[in-house]
Length: 296
Image 1 (cartoon, one colour):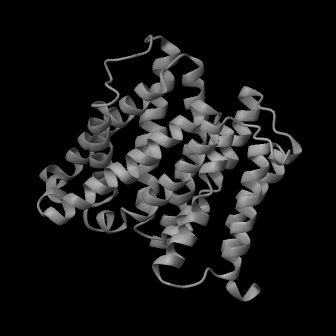
Image 2 (image 1 turned 120 degrees about the vertical axis):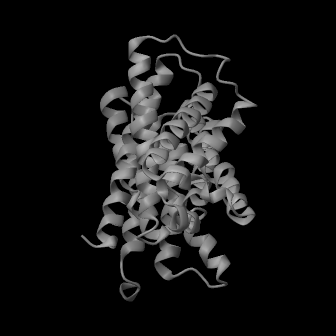
């Protein structure tokens, strides 16, 4: 199996698990779990689990990112502007709205990446990127208004948090490439989760607003932390060592698709025609970007 094939498989599996996890998080909130408490607890526990795993595999090598100030600084930046940003905004988007709209709005991040790279390299966006941007904007408007232009159908916090989650996904995708190439996906993910979890704990302590530890809550927390967070993020980050960030982000179309389908099936979320069209427009940006430039 080539590195590219492994990268593609990892970039597919990660978003699939995220899509499932988004609904699990929604179920946790339905069980009365506090969103801010959950954001802190998930990062700390997932980071601790991954650090133990990394240590068992690599020993003291897991401390390598702290041997040089430049690498340590890069890791701190990724921890707070990548890991924490995308985790916190996404959780708040689900709490303010639902898993379906949160995952779809977060998926505007491939378009944000295309715009960022165009500015960074002082190049006009390619034709397919322009078309994708238009689709993403129109799709977002349709979802936010349910097709009733001029009237916001979802809460303002849900819309803002959802779009901020998209911005966070941009940082999360672009920041760690150099780090994972040098130190590996597990080590980078473990430290980023642990550092950001400890940092946000000063704002949202885990000993405040803790949930009632009933069996359903424990089961959902276990899945979300171990599978939907720790494993899924490692898998996705590892893909960035083998394929381009734009490709990995593009394959993330599976996340909003899975999140939307499960939300409709489990929570019976009402998705009207305008919402469906908006979701299709946003998700279709992946396929537009995947087409060869010669077609356009």
